[in-house]
Image (cartoon, rainbow, N blue to C red; front, side):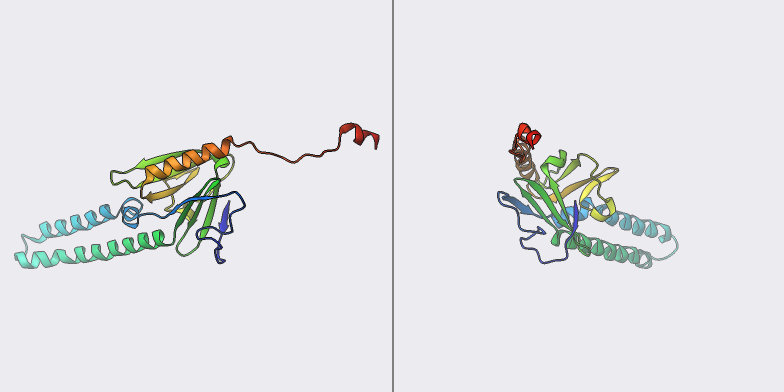
Length: 212
């Protein structure tokens, strides 16, 4: 299912031209700000450095003048700004190079900033989809795969359901209008699964084979 994609994409977000009859219903990418908060815990990290600065200030306020106590706490805030800026840069890069594609037959995920990987998830291999919706309207749609299909949590991170390592659930992370996209996927999947699969068989009758 995973596909290393280093060639020029014939269609944005897809490693090859869709076969006849396959229609792209939607393409999108994560909201980088929501991704930085949910997958990289940006607000928690920022709060941690604020706590360190406050702790440092309280620890030295009785030992030096107010101005010096403040300056003694500033390095923690500067370090916090640097770390948060790095996390925001990672989230932006992940969102910028990601393309999620929903068609009438599958879900395709072109992910990875340094190493590009494309996941193809046919609806016939998806057991269920779980929507984690936020108040802002952004949300994550995670997919429970059928059969023995396994993907790497580390390779696909952050485009996976958090803390679901075995089995890993690939996910459309922090996408805008997540509820609308989830309904679109549900309708497309139901239509695809209910479509009968026609197989080509031999036209030679059993009696004719026996006669030979």
